[in-house]
Length: 188
Image (cartoon, rainbow, N blue to C red; front, side, top):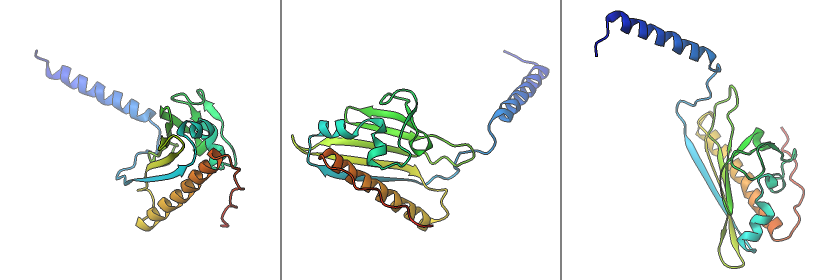
């Protein structure tokens, strides 16, 4: 098939105009990170209860507010609790992106003008014996937007401490205990 120079030129010009219209409508300030440094944190704790009992006590999507001790609580912003695509208010918007009988995975949503760190978390309860289980919490995110390796290491350890406490709280709740008050916020 042969096209004339004029037809090809007109097609290219039209494509250029259309692409500039699309880019003009795109939000200003990309959330894309040029050189991500992905990291993960895996934590676990043994619980003296069967896995199904543990999940029944702490596995609903908004149960996170109790065991993570979120002062503002948790509410479903869209969708239905426990269904794919449900968005909860924790973390300024977290979407349920995966689940099994004894686990779920969530992702934090991108924010306008803020580099997107691809943050995902998975909470899972694994049976160990008929009477014991293991709660496993895994975080995955990009920490490249932090200023240096020391800042990245400090951020990772702060997250590990927060979610290790969350696992301890899950253990307390699943074993029938009551949580102590959350620690006071650090002075600035």
